[in-house]
Length: 375
Ligand code: PEP
Ligand code: MN
Image 1 (cartoon, rainbow, N blue to C red):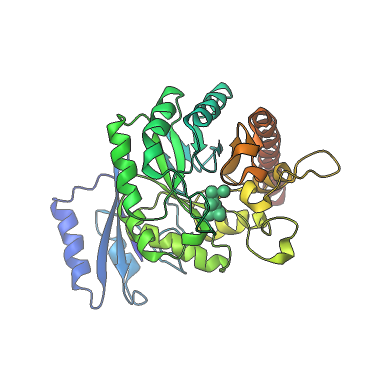
Image 2 (image 1 turned 90 degrees about the vertical axis):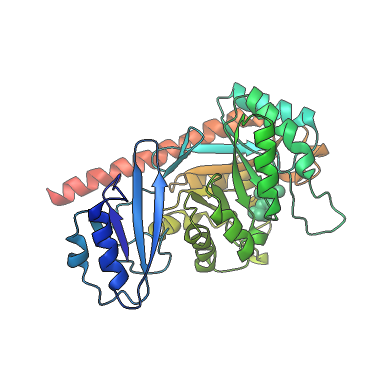
């Protein structure tokens, strides 16, 4: 059960103390407090954990500081979408809003290789109005002899260049919790010219200690990639780990699932799950067409599979697209065969816009439908 307090409730006040006094007396119930500190106001939620079945909802709602009570009807207590749950499903980070009516493309390098490639990519992104990118510094690789990323060595120039080209958010995968501190200290040394969204990859989605570490800090939002060999429910529980530790600025990313039934795509594309994830949770949803498809193959219509599947995800309401681009894909140290060339970026952006507009038209059609039904 979630007890949502009025915004800016005074926690040193008598009214708040009265409520807490009542809740602490409830047998077998633990109370966990969560605060969201926004630019305008502080929102406080109290999580009642334990057997809440018999609790008197209206009694709790009668306390002066309580705005409303939400009964958690299923899994994913914090990130889940519950009955009468009007909590927002969006957040802002470093001047960029995720979810709600915003749509973002994170095009960039799967793995940072040279400062020249980082600069060239970021300059290109800026020229096309982009303020977000992906840049891999820590790469989990199947083969121990493969390039594992430059790690913290590349962070200073990646962050400096991001500042130079007005990039506000970089999605960057982490594979170990000490990388969070490395990223934070490199950002500080560079004078915080940009922001980082911590990416937890498909291979680490059930690394519960990593999830807890990323969840305990609230400085960076987290982009969590669906596990490629576990159920959707298990992946969503992983997201809930982050929130249960305190960080609810989580974006869930579909990136395909591993099965030979998806061949010849690298993974079986799962973007039909965009609306499903939105129904089950309040997280913004991202799609990664690059790691789903894994190649630059085109259909006979001349459109790359990467574009086709991205459009499929966006037309069903994806809020964000993560995509590999590279100035010289043939020289990329990781995932070159699936990288788009820089000159293909404007084409991709225009194509995604068509799909986004089509999604909005579909929403408008649905609204019209409802009016006609009611009339
Ligand atoms: C990536 O985005 O670079 C990556 C490794 O993705 P995934 O975890 O989905 O394989
Ligand atoms: Mn990759």
